[in-house]
Each structure stands twice: as structure tokens, then as C-alpha cells.
Image (cartoon, rainbow over the protein chains, first blue to last red):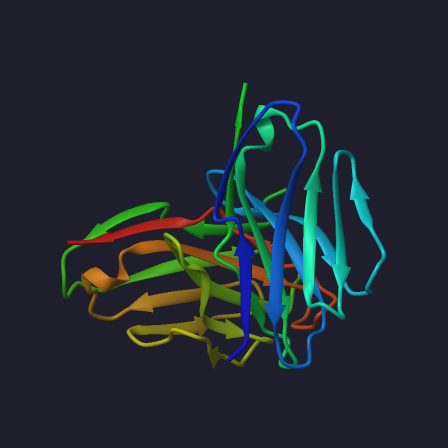
Length: 110
Length: 114
């Protein structure tokens, strides 16, 4: 059965810290992996990763995919209270369906 | 920019009542989706519509029906609500159901069945 597992489930850090969120996947005929940020309402898109080893970057956020070891990481540097959210990762399978992880709840303390 | 709009945002139902969640997107997307999100379980696909005129079951379709009314609109119906259907429901859309396309979400509908 296809699955996406995120770790840790929750994380509390102080403002200014750097965090690394993990996403491992077991997906038949994997196509690509997506990261989303969910605050109170709708998940908002962060990154889509299709190629191994190529870092995607947006401001203080970056992400990379390892297709050999079947995982991705999302890094956030110099965290701010506005980074507090649930971070979701999802992988596309061969039927172009997204398999979602349960999310990592990140809390940034001032 | 409206994006994906879903209504209602909040609803309380009694067990056995029926209701329809409405969703519309203005991005000319072909594919639309209904998800439910429960604590600790992530997003689970209920139904999806790869293109106008087609609908398919997702991971958790039991107790739900859908209608792709036209390219813009995709509704989700609960025929006889059960407490197990208490959840947050998200409508989403993407240009095509392909692995290159980003999915865009509506703001969510909080449904409580008592």
C-alpha cells in the first residue's frame, strides 16, 4: 500500500532556530512530491520536486528530494512566528493521485 | 482573485440529515477534488473529477456522492449524515490530473454531525 510518512509529528522551536522536516514515501511509480503549508485554513503550495538532488528554494525555505532513499526534507532557516503551521507533504503515484502524509505541526516560540 | 470557493464554511447537521457542499473554481482547471481532513490522518481523497463529465471514487467515498455540474462546479453530497462524517472538507482543483500540476485548495468547510 502506498504511503507517505512525515516526521516529526510536531515540533516546538524558538524564533531564529533552523528546522528540518522529513517526508519519506513508498509510492508505486512515484512521479513527484509536493510540500504545502497549512495555517488555519487552506493548504498553500510551497514546492514541487520531481528530480533528485536539485534543491528548490524560496526565501528562508528550501527543499530537496532523494529518489534513491525515498525521502524529502523541508528546511526553514531563521524561523519566525509566522512559520508556525502544519506542513504537509504529498506524493503523486502512477495514477496521478496524491498520497498525503499526516503533516508536521511546527510551533515557533517568540 | 477568487480561486477555489466552497460553501458553506460551517454547518451542523443532525444524524440522518442530508446536505450538499458546493465548490466552484474560476481558474479554468480541468480536475477537481473533494478531500476530508481529520486530526492525525492528513488529507484523504473522497471523490475526484479528472475532467468535466467524469467522476471517480477516491480513498474514502462511502456515504458521499458528487456531481460535476460543469467545468467550474463540483458538489459533494451527504445523503444521510453520520457522526463519523464530522470533519473538515476541502475542495481543490488542478489544471489537469497530472503529476506536474499544483493543486489549489478552497478555504474549507467545517462540518459537525451530532
